[in-house]
Length: 270
Length: 182
Image 1 (cartoon, rainbow over the protein chains, first blue to last red):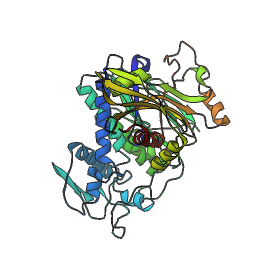
Image 2 (image 1 turned 90 degrees about the vertical axis):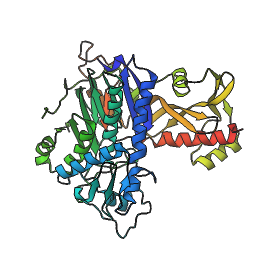
Image 3 (image 1 turned 45 degrees about the vertical axis):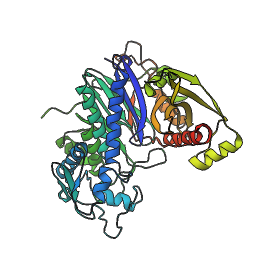
Image 4 (image 1 turned 120 degrees about the horizontal axis):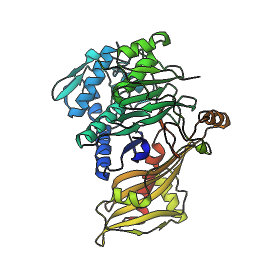
């Protein structure tokens, strides 16, 4: 199966453009259900929104906050990856991002904001979560991939056998579909890669611009020099998070460390 | 543990014919398909372009923070058995790097019910980039593994902001307030 056998739709969500491709037999309702799932995660995990689960957690001053099961699922993955990568991926970097002005300040007390925390600062229960006071969570490095996986789960539960979702470069293909993909580097050059099948690919560039408003920080919360990092994995959340691990790891150890965490670093021709 | 996936065939090139003005061009829905997707309950769409005076356009800019280029906004009344269910508008946004046509559904109460991208065109950054882009396609023949037609492969890369479309929707809501609200 190729993309030509599919219908495609695109909507602005998660701050980027989300494209969904499904076999031509699929109804409009299936597309709508997948987009709705992504929109739900967008509302739950948005740092910018004042009433998302994430913002309520960040403003709770250490109190337990009831959260949607999807928020807790993403938080569990984020905490586990923060732990497994020894902070190379770090979901507690929100304070650094607020300080540098990348993310909004809300009503956080700037005197007590920690630049970063550790996985142990997050406690997750069956219905809610809490974060050590001063630690600010940001799920930017994982939520887009998580949303892709979650929407694919929605589609698969509805009986869809194959397709793909591309959320601003976090792309995953499922089923028998072979999706040709290219990686765009930080200079704008495209590198054709091959066919993506039952796999996810994520790419991060470490230079922020008007066009690409993302920013990557190292494990100490410092900006990373311009480069493009692409990672493949079985799931989009993992590929997404591992691009941050790759960015924060010295080139000599990058492939080995990313592989130990379940991903494959891709080398781009200069 | 499952082995970590890799690409099926590498590298896959795309058709050479598209190396023109756009690096990436994709059509998603026709106007009619978007109407049905955004207003599945509607039985009738009546074309009702909105003519905007200079004063109204100035007011749109004031309310939305973004200017209205066109004096006529493409718009349709979505009706169900003669009753208004909402407004369907088609709009373009032109960025430094992209040209996007999208449709927005605005309910009779002035809420945004949905947005669908109709077509997406990404432009070249420069001449050097273009020659490198062209090189990516040399050697592609019709017998190649992937039949891509006019499509370029999916792109994984730095996140392209959708702010231009969300700003465009703010502008459409201002148009609703100024020209459509009963």
